[in-house]
Image 1 (cartoon, rainbow, N blue to C red):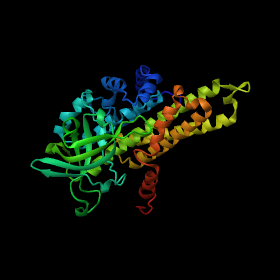
Image 2: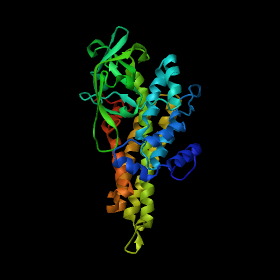
Image 3: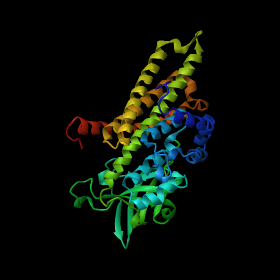
Image 4: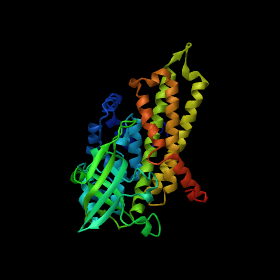
Length: 386
């Protein structure tokens, strides 16, 4: 809630205190330089906040997705952009839930200690988009190794990560009974791969978000880097995607509260025609509407996270939380910009930066229309539309 304490107040207070060391000016300068917030990320990792979902036996805090979502929310609510770090949370989940004991022992303690970054997940391809079952990147077993060929696009944080989760087809689509079968998940050591079968091409974009095209040309991956069973990769990825959507929802909620608070403060301070503009219902009502939408989305976020932590089916809740939160944050962004008028376009107010950042989530990591399709088919029982 907006001004109420909750069971996560200690986490909230700690994240806010850390974020005070990286004020608006810091993120404004990072955005201006189109740089990566290395100092901020290092501070989060050193404090152990990005190990929230790793069990204590591997050196993490074992707090679960609910607490992780609060961390992401507070980063954005403090004016930062958790998009630089959220991959460390949900990508690790694929390894945690589906990896072998040997893989967990090898990687999780290093990730928990902040010595390894697993910030990247390579799923999307140029010719398939969100139709994941039709991916064309292949992995073929040869002489005790996997040989990968293909292409990925919109793959984030590759240049600031040590490990990457890769989804590739190991059985041709024509040879499987269900199109969701025959795909496998691998751990890719980026330091051993870039320039040795993996080419990375950055994609300049609207926001300061490091994302890339990847080209695989006979990239060799050790056989033991296969996560789980061969051919079941799509199922393993879905678990990670549910966590991703819930965390994105939390970030949007943090953005929403940031926009509302900035607009509320400005509306109380800005005097036009001898009265604060916040006295006008034309300013009040849109702000109240945006606040209601953020609060409602917040409830769905916590329900999705609760079900995930309880290992219950949370696909519907994760999708709906992402939809509601992205919609609410975008509405709050528009209201905040409108409330500030011309000053909202000035970089020194940081609204235009956050405006660009929160707009992304209408499109990624899953578009609004695909969420409509999911709800129509899987919840309402309507015929599949594609």
